[in-house]
Image (cartoon, rainbow, N blue to C red; front, side, top):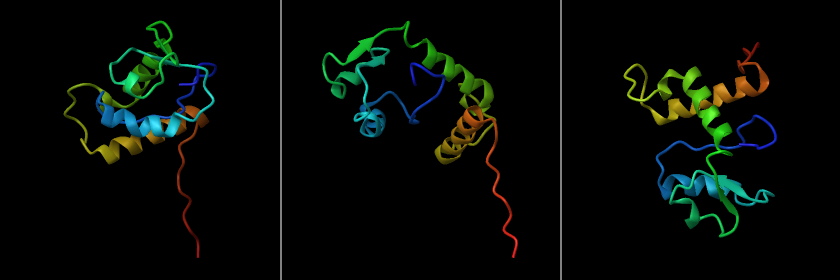
Length: 115
């Protein structure tokens, strides 16, 4: 999350394991950040240098708000849903489309190729 604007900068789908967080950390670790705000999950100190992590539920409210918004728009993110495909690829595509819509106010629709 960007602390200064309501936007999701990067994301990953998975559980709360180090194996899930590692690819995300590889993508974001070189960003020019003064500190990383987390919810204190035990995996983070394996990646975030000591002194660079702020554990705060107060600062996590925007993240929790975005999680709530994603669950609102995408029923497949509701816990224990039986209504939708459990395909991780379909979930990734759904999240990408929703984030694009929330950021740009439009859904990217491919234009037909005329020959």
